[in-house]
Length: 395
Image (cartoon, rainbow, N blue to C red; front, side, top):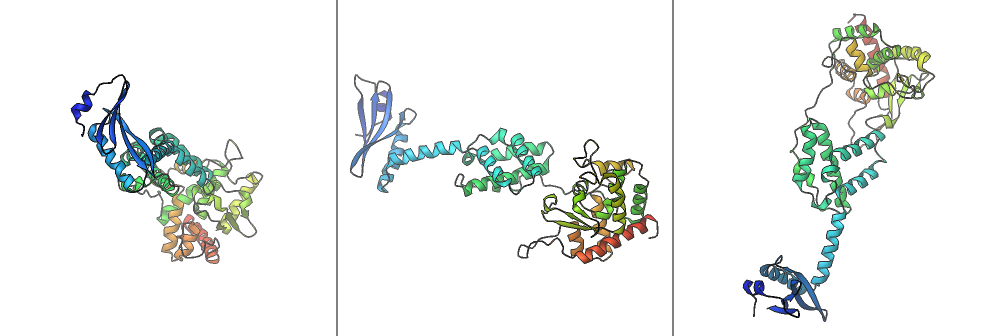
């Protein structure tokens, strides 16, 4: 006879444990310590008992649902007791596989291809902004809203670009967890479009020929440190990225070949880059060598010659010359050169290769740092000549 809620609720412990059967192998075991749902069944000819749960946490209706599931497993030749043990082991395993555990593992694997700066920056971002909020959670249990709330904390501080980078990295971590069978989905995918879009900021740059001439004359009249003045004079001739300029080393220069070969690890595109040296650039470099040729960097720092000058030196010098951040920046020399060289009709590919941000065709061969080199040498000399004409007011 099937049990009722009233019978189950009113069952009292006796001198010895006893059973109240509900049919189909299930019963309520009543003891002095509590009431327990059990299911007797046979699997592969052996009698076994499945612990269903404790009353009243597991109600009569709940117990019947679990009996149904167990019987369905038996019909599919699956032992419900073994399934329960496996599910428990899986739950324990998942609880130990936290987001932080996977993130650190992913980070360690990627350090071989990242720069030292990016390696430190990425881990620092996670330790400061991600791990304190979702780091201890099992990665398989993290909900999209939990990840979004974490990333939005970064966004609300005004660091929109950092928030997007964090979201991208989190997506990579979830996909790594999927690949290693420790997560079933990348929850960052459903969060696309949930962050404030990044508004691209263009670097301040002077592109009017008359104003460029005025800037070059101001640079010639700069009264600050000689090394800084040389950096200012070489910036428009090289139009490399500010970080590449300030970290230039004497060992990278071949004055006989009139070339500066920047190692791949210093380049954003991670490819060797050649800067042909115009006659004007060579003249400045030879003069600079008398001052800093005995140390590692062309532009050593003030406090230590073992380190390059500060990343803000060129911009600070431009401010000293009277050019504010909305008028000109160290990075702006690249935009200046790109715009005018295109206007002058130089080949687009030669300009892009010289700027070191040419698009890579996935099907084509690896980027060749010597692409268009003869044309680039010609272009760099003509560019230097043109700047001299602007400085003299001849254009």
